Amino acid sequence: MFNLVYAMGTGGAGGGGGGGLGAFLPLIIIFAIFYFLLIRPQQRKAKQHKQLLSDLKKGDKVVNSGGLHGVITGLGDDVVTVEISPKVRVKITRGSIAGVIRKSEGAS
Figure 1 (cartoon, rainbow, N blue to C red):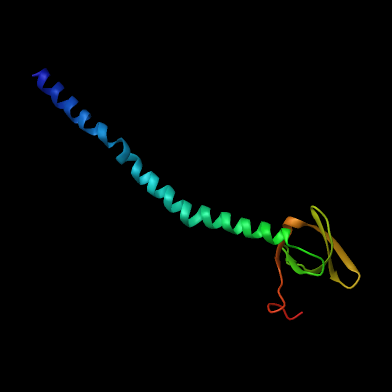
Figure 2 (figure 1 turned 120 degrees about the vertical axis):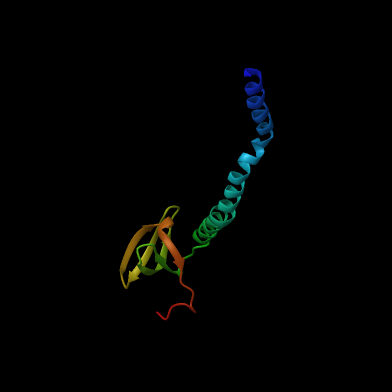
């Protein structure tokens, strides 16, 4: 009788050995979904922001992440001088610039 129970137990375990890839398949699918819906667009946006920062030049109208609008009067490696009002200049880090205001976007 013990041989019969032992045989039934090992038969079930031997059949489950081929399901190793099947067990990881849902995880692989979830990772692929996360990659295409979250990771890849975030990398693309970071690449565009890096390109925007490298294309800055004097005279560009910019807005920083704090919401200050101004015109670039000086550029450094990490620091940008922005004139926010006549004769009022502030230095901000290059990475805090959120965007460049195009002539068609802003009225000021």
